[in-house]
Structure formats: structure tokens, C-alpha cells
Length: 143
Length: 151
Image (cartoon, rainbow over all chains, first blue to last red; front, side, top):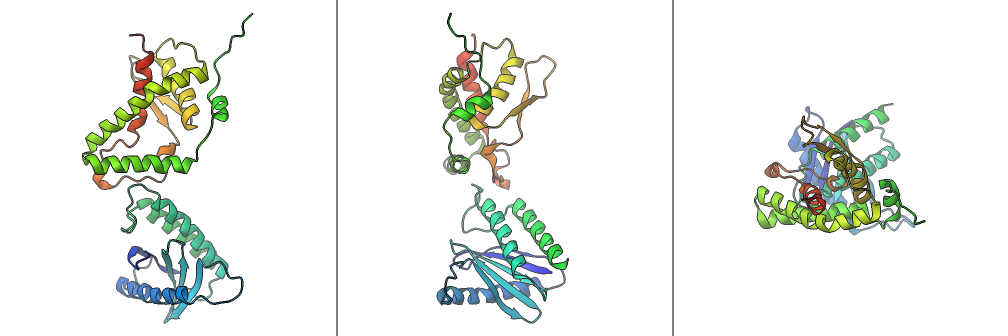
């Protein structure tokens, strides 16, 4: 089950954080997201020379902690998407699919002329789309 | 015998004109509105400016419209509204509008765009709730009709 998604700007400023569970402490999730940013920076600065791996956008499993798994995705504009989930058996393809749809929703939100780049995303449509994508992810991995 | 050319449908004209990327168009219009808001700050002022800009476009656009579409003179206001919605919008924006909400006199109606390319991705923030984002369209219609009105 997805616990939290976050969008972080290129200066590591948070643009959007949404948690999908009331059980866990919101602050703890923010902390988890923040720690994962360090891992992202490390991966970005030391790219693994593993042959023709040109797809630098999807960063994969960043690090497992306690009962969470954290996945990362980097866009060309250095905006990072962080996904925190409690699922134990998450298929890689599912996460990639999730990030692709999330990226599409993000692009639409940013195309709004009233959105200021660098400020928080306040679009209600974006929040709704993210909820839909998260629900779809939950259904696909449970089935 | 000279050939008489009948009025062309909106689809046919739209297919024959040069096109521009829809996203570029949407983003450009969004940038215009944003800049107007920054410069003028008042929502009413921005509405007036958009209307004025549309008016200036409309008085020029009407000639192109008449030249390309070959419509005959409209008999009454109902026909005018239909032509605007079906031929005009189709020709320039590529979308078809519908005319509804006729009042008792037949002097007032609503032209509804189901799928407006100007407003893709746009969400009005709470600070601009009185903004008529597409007011340029009403200006265009006003300008165009003024040039062909019999008065």
C-alpha cells in the first residue's frame, strides 16, 4: 500500500507531499522523504557505469527502511518524485508505470499558467489525479 | 456561366488552413493572461483588456472568415449565432460550439464550448475568481459582428 508520494524541486524544496494513510505520523513520513533525497543526490552524482543504462529517470529502490520501501524518479529538470510504500512484493514494472502516470499528471499541473515554478503545487486536479493513480496502483499490486 | 461557390463547411476550411501546435497556443494564451494580471492587477481591468484585444482581432478576422467560408448574409440573429458556433469556431479553433439558452425575444443566447483549447491545464487560483479567462473570445465576436452589422 502506498503510504506517501512527494514531489521535490531541484533545490530540494518540497513542492507536493501527500500521505495516504492516517495511521502513520505525517512528520515521520516527511523525514523519510527527506532522508531519501540524500540517496538521490548520491545516485545522481555517482552514476553507476553499468553499460547502456541511459534511462536515468527511474532511480528504482532507493533504500529500504524499517517497514517502508522508498522509490525514486528523477526528471530532466532535476525534479524528483519520491514514492514510499509498505508493500513487500512490489513489481518493478508497476512502480515504473506509476511514475510514468505521475509524471504525466505533474506535467499537466505545471502547464497551468497560474502555477509558479518553484512554489508548491496547489492544483486540485493534480491532487485528484494522484489519488486515482495511487488507488490504481494499490489495486494492481494487490491483484 | 459563372460558377457560384456555395458556403464551405467549417471542417473543410479547418482542414485546409495552416495549423499550429495546440499546446504552444494554449501556453501562449496563458502567458498573455498571466502577464496582464501582473501588469494590471485588477481582475476587472484584465477582463476589459482581454475584451479589447479580442475586439481588435475580431475586426480583422471577419474579412478572412468571410473570404474563406463564403457564407451568405444571415437572415436573423439565430442564424448568425449558428454560423458563429458551427463555422466560425470550427474554422479558427477546430472545436464546434453549441448554441443554447435562447431567451423569449430571441435576442440573447449562450454559445457553449465543450472542449476549449484555450483552457487546457488551466486552474484559476482563488485570488482570481472573477476573471473571465476566455474573454478574448467575446471580444472577437463583438468586433467581427460590429463590422458586418447593417447599422
